[in-house]
Amino acid sequence: MTEMDPFLKLAAAARRESVPTIDVSERVLTSLRDPAVAARVASSSDPAYYLFALVAVSSAAVVLLFAWQSFESLREPLTPLVEPLYLVIR
Image (cartoon, rainbow, N blue to C red; front, side, top):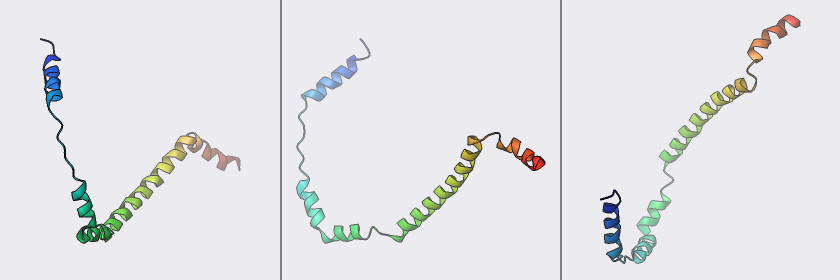
């Protein structure tokens, strides 16, 4: 008995089963026409969403600030070693 035999038996059983027919289009259209659903969609501009977006944007700005400083040090890694020489040469 190989490792694939149980899988092949399950695949054969799945092929013998009939596909169920489900039509939910009428229920979806009815729920879209319902004024309560429209009111729920319209009220999705909750102030909590704006507060969450503000926190997300501000945290992204802080991360961007640290990332920019790290990028600058990677771009010119020897600059901190040479900067004291500029003071002596002037």
